[in-house]
Each structure stands twice: as C-alpha cells, then as structure tokens.
Length: 403
Image (cartoon, rainbow, N blue to C red; front, top):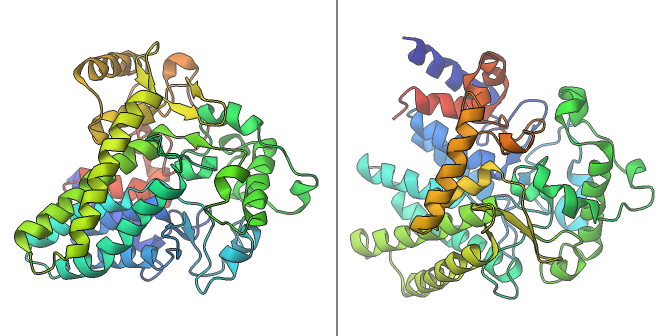
C-alpha cells in the first residue's frame, strides 16, 4: 500500500541519519544530536518496532546533561565542519566538557516521550522500566528542577527562555520585538561563520542582523561562564515562551504519572526520595497552571501567547504554540472555546492545519525545525522533505500505523 511504502521510506530517513546511538535531525543543516528532535526520533524508532534503538537515543541525549541539571539543546558527539556555531562558539564551559554541548536548552518534550516509551515497554513485557526508575527518571527530575529553579527564579509560575533557539521555533515572528532589544556586540559578525545558508535558501533562514543578535546573546552567557544563577540578571532576552511552558507543564504531569505508576506497579523501585520528588512535581504543576493562565492568556485576543518578562508585555502574535493548551491541559472551558474558535478561523485560511503563525496575521516565515508547518509533510513537496528530515520521517512512520 501507499502508506506501507511511505513507512519504509520514512524509516530509511532515520537509518540514513543514524550516527550509531544518536540520530541527526538532518544530514547537512543539523549534523549533531538535538534535544527535542531526539525525543521525537526516539518515539519514531519505537514506532518502527526498534524500541531498544529508541532507548539508545534517550541515553545519548542524557549523556550531555550538565551538573546543574540542564539538558542542552545540542550534544556534539562528533566534529562536523558543515555546522556553525560548532562547539567553539559556545565558550569554555560548553566546548571543554568531556562531551561538548551547547549552553542553552530546548522544549523538554523528552519526559513525555519517556513516559510513553515506558508504558509501551510494560505492555510488551520489556526490561527497561528498572533503568527508567534508577537512572533516566532521576536525570529528568534534575532537568525539571533546573527549569523551575533557574528559569523561574522568582516563582511567578512561568519559565523563561534566554534565546530564541530555546523555543525550537527560532525564526518565530513573536521574537522580533524582544530580539531587537538585544544589543549587537561590536565586531560580532567577524567572530562566526554561518553555514546554514549554504544548505538552505537564505530566504528560509534568519536574517544576518538576527543572527548577530543570536551570537551576541551567546557571548553574554559565556562572559558569566554559563552560570545559571547569574544568567537571569545578564540576559537581555528573558521571555516566557508559550510552547516551552505548555510542554514543561505537560512534562511535569507525565513525570507525576511515572512516579504514580512506579509506586503502584513497582513499589520495590519507588524510593523515599521519589516520594519527595513527586511532591515537588505536584507543587510545580500547581504553580505553572496558575502562572500560565495569569501571564500567557491574552484576554483580548482569546489565545495563549508568549510574554516578554523584561518589559512585562505580552507578545500578541498568535502562533501554533498557543494550541498546546490542549496538550498541557491548562485551559478552562471558556478559554478552550475561544482558542478553538480562533483555530477554526485559521482552518478556513489554510489547506492543512497547523500553520506555525496565524494566517490571519500575514502568515509564517521560513523553515521551522522539522518542517515549519506540519502541512509541509503532507503537501506535494513531501518527497523532498522526507528525504532530509528525521522528524518528518517520524511523522510518516506514525501515520503509517507504526504501532
């Protein structure tokens, strides 16, 4: 059948991008391991019947975890001259590690993926639940604790990102205003070389001025040695991104579910320490459910949006991330009704949902992660996309009834 053939081609993409234990999002443009790409890729391997390979993906990502708990957005398992900024641009705390990494993070979807994979393991009589309880879950807990301590230092109930790259939607119209406030450091454009525009049409990538600001931010973080305690006061970009917050809240809920599952079904693995951690996670859920509704709900627009925490102003650009309120389970009946009404309007304007930015506000811009709109994976240029992008491959494996 057509779907079976699509599944085979999709699996071939993952195999082609497999580097032995981790998978690159795309061969030339993203030739390392990326945090949230790897989460989806792990699910793709599992959906394709290669559960053990999925667990390898998770382990490889966790090997990059920092002492303070952060899981970086890139793990540099090998040197690839086709990508810049490589390890050197990130400064010494990043490039001098035993395993070099970037110095920022990405949406923490990994926890929700691990929950799904753990449940699948149990159904299939797999052996990985002990590993989840003894090494993977503790690492993920430290990651969540890092977010709550260092990215919500005043406990307002939303976490901040310090760089557009942390959102996973780098080229998002919502970042225009807060990014313009980031000072461009003198001579910064002489200190890095862009490689992205040699692989992808420049019209689909951020402008030079934006890139100068991106690198200026990294230099500001390097100056304080990427010290998570000092970054809040030193970052000229401090934004509560709606996607990161929704994904983290959902991840907290999935973490709570994993603790509950272990307590009920594997009480021998449920330690007194886990009870304390579970109670912390419950407090975080409560704090974030309140914080997201207070800070990220845009009453006039009837939608969840991001917020510039430095200026205390909402970024009223409506993006697909606002729809993650369903995923996070954060919205009351009236808000859900208004978000749904807004998305129905979008649906009238596009062939496929979900466009990355409201089509009522002048559309979207360039590539976003694994394919901008999910629409791309389903349109006539799907062939070209699937040949390159691991995440598009994952979507097709799943569409083709991978599990």
